[in-house]
Amino acid sequence: LTMLPEPFDGLIVGLNYTILDGDATAPDGTKIPLPKLSDSVANFVLGYDRGPFDLRVAVSQRDDYLDEIGLDGAPSRFAKERTQVDLSGRYRLNDTVRLYAEVNNVTDESESYYYQLEDGTQALSQYEQYGYTANFGVKIRY
Image 1 (tube, one colour):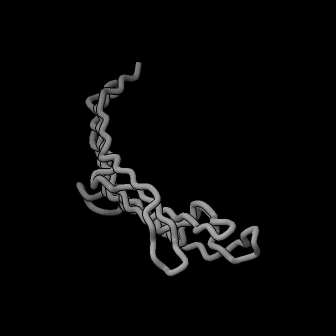
Image 2 (cartoon, rainbow, N blue to C red):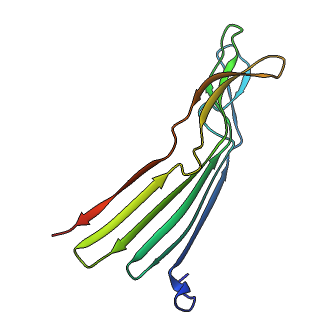
Image 3 (tube, rainbow, N blue to C red):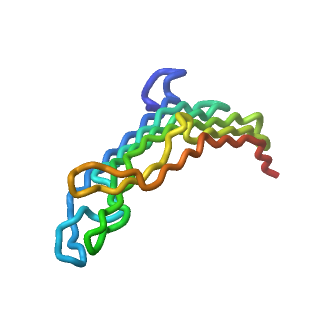
């Protein structure tokens, strides 16, 4: 958005949204969703990059997806939809030294999987809680 007046000319906005529509055929001949692919995936970035500052917020979202195909009467396993928020920032002290910090999964989003049963209900298969991760440091170019 460099066409905006100062100091707004450093704003960054990014958005993408992907829709997938397709299916596959399981070994037993039934139609199934495409394995390992969500029907929709969205990403949004809002940031500011001007002068010594580079700050960003990123949000990523994906729908459920088929993780494992159930065979011989076993239920199929799906990954549950997930939305993750990440933050990053950099500050340039001079041409040689930069400070940086990143925090991923700020909202402490879990990762979970479930079996889709024949009666339409879901049975939890796996649940993982990671919390957030953070790193920070100094980069020096010489």
